[in-house]
Amino acid sequence: MAKNDFGQRKNPLKMVIYIAAVILLLVCILLMVFRTRSKQRDYESEIAQLSQGETEYVRPERTTEAETETGSEASGDSAAASEETQEQDASDEASEETQEESQEDSQETESSEEDGAEESETESESEEIQADLRILVLNGTGVEGVAGYWESQLEADGYEDVISASYAEQAEDETVIYTQERQQALPFQDYFTESRIRIGEITEGILMSDGEEEPEDVDIYIVVGNTDARSE
Image 1 (tube, rainbow, N blue to C red):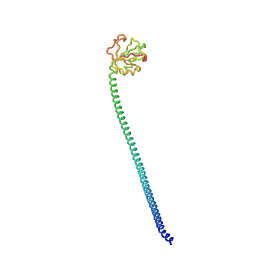
Image 2: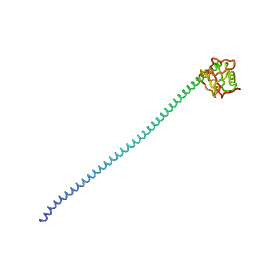
Image 3: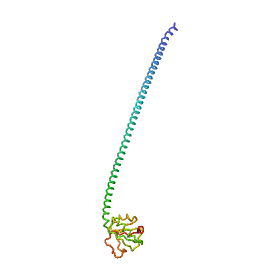
């Protein structure tokens, strides 16, 4: 009987220990489940955050690319507009330069025409005056008849007061025309193409024919050179 009582007393203790172990096991299981669910939630939250982060990251990239393309197009349009403006400016400058050159050419042409008209008037007036000039042709070449030849040539062209004489000095190779006014001597270079003009007069060496006096108030002295020594 004693042994049976001890066994009965011992059985409730075992039951208490068993129940406590079961409760502890259940608690552990519950903790594990809770932790598992918590980790699952954290994992899902991280997944969601990563997903949102990727979406936000991709969208700015797309927006940036669009803005870059738009900016590039705008830059290209600006560059094209700038080039067109530069070309237009260059065209305008070229047009202005062309107009200025045309105006300058026109002014030069008008000036040349005026100068030519003035020269023509001067030459015409000079030719009218030349007929009244007193011209003395001197022969120093040693060839007879040279002064007389040129006297007849000048008279045939309308010069009315032409006198021929000899020259005591040796003539130069080129004909020399002496005058007080250079403009008066220019027409005579058409006769003596290699001649030179000197400002002055001849006062010595003039040899007139017998019975002739040395002329006064001579306007043009022509000392015929060897290159113009003609007698026929």
